[in-house]
Image: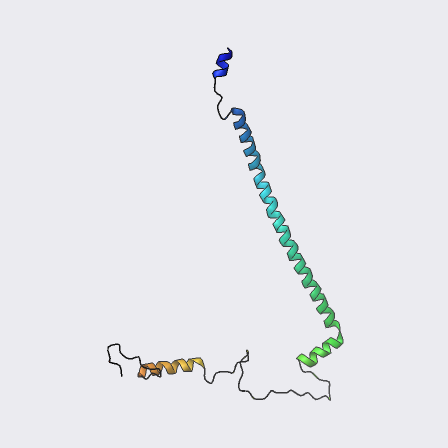
Length: 144
């Protein structure tokens, strides 16, 4: 009987190995969802902590602003500089800069005429056939 047992070939995948592989897969799949939820919750916690710190900074800035607005000297200074208020009997002077032409908000001089006027003039000029640009010579024409 020893010869019969020695002649039998064992399969490459035993039933024990298959069951062990199946158990490992089940464990991995059962841990995947909670692990993903844990990572998502940690990211959410980090985002909320950042939002909380920004809100605390905003609150502290607003508290400082509130303290400033409670100070009568600050209110007086703001009224004088921003609103040009004066006490009775005081005289306020507003210095107007030298005439440099009309300026736009970004400091560039304003154009002499609006863009739509220039556009309309170019349309009328094209309609009349008068162009201010050089005429392109014909390719077949002999050179001068």
